[in-house]
Length: 304
Image: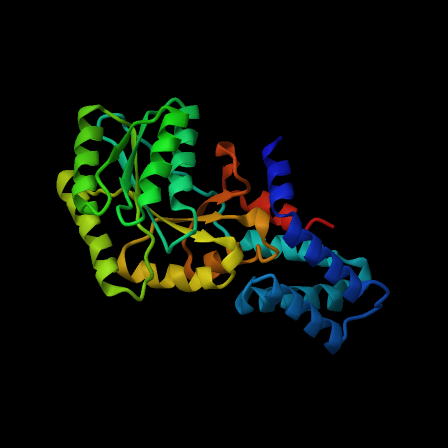
């Protein structure tokens, strides 16, 4: 399956809901009315595009209708253009490895968003590009997390550094960085425990893990990726805001986009926080974690 087809398939639930509602609102309507504009705004908010972008799209629709009437661009084309305008021209992937020292990537977020699976899928991606990787099991609170990461490691033939259940996560991170350096690994993916931003002790522990990594390797972690679950909608934006206050996030990974009709939250995060969306999860298989592409996202979500 090609990349664009993956986007279309993964975003199908959001696309179908938007398409049905927009066609219902505007089919047979010769002009814009207060009623159909309000309905369009409600539909966009229902897909979790956020109030700022919803207003931006509505304003663009008004402008097009006022100048061109129904003979101008379709609602779908206008929406696609507005979405694309929200993102930088080029979305950067992971920091490139210089092969001398590992690029350390810390995966953070609340419980249940898919950090462990994302770590494994990223290891799979860099392996396909000819780069070596290692996984660090720094979620020592959820016993199943260590076993899950080891299973992925066996499946992908990627080494996993782990401690015992209840071990100090910072100690595991230290050992993992040491091992990655000595084995000249290109990428070290650090799977951290899920935590709520309201739990100060757990957020301080995350900062400690990052400090220990930084003492062992300058400027590490080189990437801090916040993993968010698309099915939580705008709650993901709140998580991003709060985590970014504690640690400096370098990018967002959005999982479970194939299971939601609220796919607009991708754009809401970019619009509100200017944090790059680096990868999106469109399924369960290792290659279903895809680099984010604004054009393909817009085409898939507002396909007519």
